[in-house]
Length: 512
Image (cartoon, rainbow, N blue to C red; front, side, top):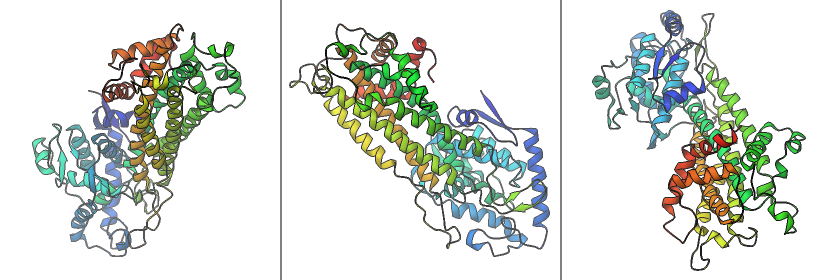
């Protein structure tokens, strides 16, 4: 099994995906263990002094003015975890919880939090045992970290609360730890706070969304090319020299992808000799501009994610010179903004895909295709309601594009008076990514049927490869009306699993 070694300098997005989705094992490096020990010595020395130090010998948030006596500090750390584990609502997905736990471990191993090596090792042991704390949808404001979600994870570390075992059964966390030979942790000064004070949940969801969107943007370029082909559009607008004079990198990449898919097509430009059409509609002609802008948004989001992966987010932090200082690095604004920005770009990509699908189904705009791509229009409804489903998904994506980060609700008796709502931005982006997958699947379903209905014209080799692959995957082609939902589900699985991109690339070479 693949193993990810966590050191003091952060991890990569690939590491996060390997642990969250691939079940990779986690190990602590020797330098991480040494850094943990050194930072802990600093915290222990401060704990022994009479002067109050935030997070070590004081209360938290609006209660930070109270000095806590040594005999009460272990209880203080337990109490902060128990009281902050106040989430509600549906359970969060296993991959999100694993990403959240792993990213918190990454920060702990930086040696900037003052957590003991034994605590970090127990975090790794829980991940390696396949134990997943029960974390709920609601509870994070994206400031002072993802407090409630991280608290539910810390509760498992203490052997309290509920968790899911590797068999998928939810049991008391203490029972699961005992089954796997893991000793619950007795938290000491600073440790409860250090386990809660990070942007790990929103960052984990950002990294997974970027991985999914990378595949979806390539898939959208493919379906846009198929729709252009089915509509007998021109590929001249995809010429590199046209995109070089507006040098947005994403736009050029999308245009190049579409051009590669359409290479050798006998359908593109076919209308030029027998119809007065001079230009294709915006949804066809401007596909690279819209998808490209989204790609450039993703590039910015990756930059933010990489910076966060290299960060040690906690409050207070142990600095290299031995100082323990309060700070505001837990604020989720940098991550929240790009999560919202990605949801906006994804909504627009879904919107333009739906417009192409609608054009394929409208006999007045499809340039010779049957109404709704039906076998016997009137007797058959064809894909009429598939487009309704697609439109409903687009409408939801537009609602999800409303920024969460534009909102702020003060908390903790006005001590935490401006929050990022980054967790909420991440949660709605996950829904948007799911919706976008379905929207692209419906365009794929319509476009492949439309290309097949262009009898006597030869599609591009890449298009032929897509049609063959999608039919082999159980997505049926043209014919009389049938129960449509299974076909759409099969198309969704085809796109979601990356099979659309995999069908094209042996013909085109790797897509950008």
